[in-house]
Length: 338
Ligand code: GLY
Image 1 (cartoon, rainbow, N blue to C red):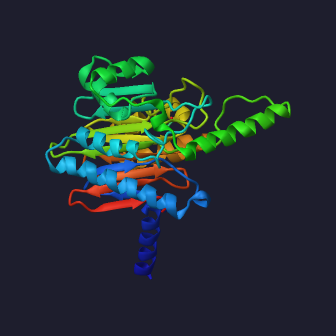
Image 2 (cartoon, rainbow, N blue to C red; image 1 turned 60 degrees about the vertical axis):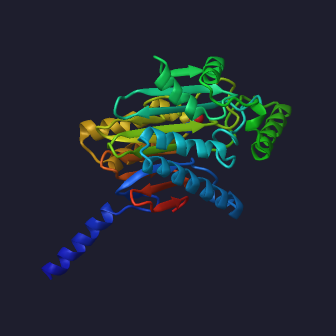
Image 3 (cartoon, helix red, strand yellow; image 1 turned 90 degrees about the vertical axis):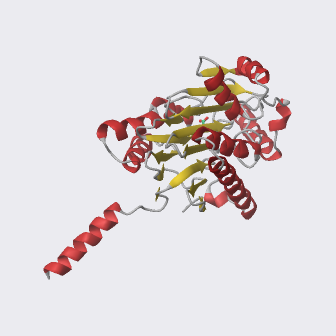
């Protein structure tokens, strides 16, 4: 009887600790990435899903190849994010969402967990790979963030690829903004006040976290931001401590979600601070911020976390999260809703 009660107790405890759907806690990861919260399940098509999975796979393999050839965690993060920026299925680089004025304004940041150096660009419209511009800000200037024209002039001087703003245009995102404008015009005609707002957040930011052979952590994030955002609006992705943070003493983190909340809650730094000062695990810290603090305000979002031991975890309060990871032995996993 006692043994039976004990085994029931152990089973209940195990259930309590058991990861529910959507929880990832994976050891020996060297690179973890996300492609944002993405489409609601009801809107997902086999074509979109195949393209998302292919993009994540390609990013993981490219980033891992860097690590395998002696690259640093910063190299792996930059490389993985560049692949995702170049893929028009994700909301970063080509394929970015449109602002209320019909422009693509891009934000990105990167952070080195060893030195705590960081770089960011915001509201750029001509830099093909904003993550590389962010890294150049970190490595070639005494600043952390450059915005708009200043960032673009700097990126050009660094020899980074500059493109016409039309490079970022995609039919999918253009149709989406036209639809929003139509709805806003109808609202105006009905005498309703219309402010440039988020029709559907379209949370497709991309990010990466990595650890290298020297056990140095790095994190990076890149995005087109929120669909229908105001001209000049900047989200959490280029804000160090909000969308991106890396600290060799704890973890590397990249976030996706409604940036305003991630800025207000300093989400990525809050996760690191809980790990360092409350001595909780990366999973507990991330769940507290994403599934308690943000959820109380209905703020949708997610974080990916790679801790200093190489354990990768995610926390989300959304239906899905485009994400993947690759372990030291090269095994790739990609997940969306599970
Ligand atoms: N998390 C992306 C943004 O709000 O811009």
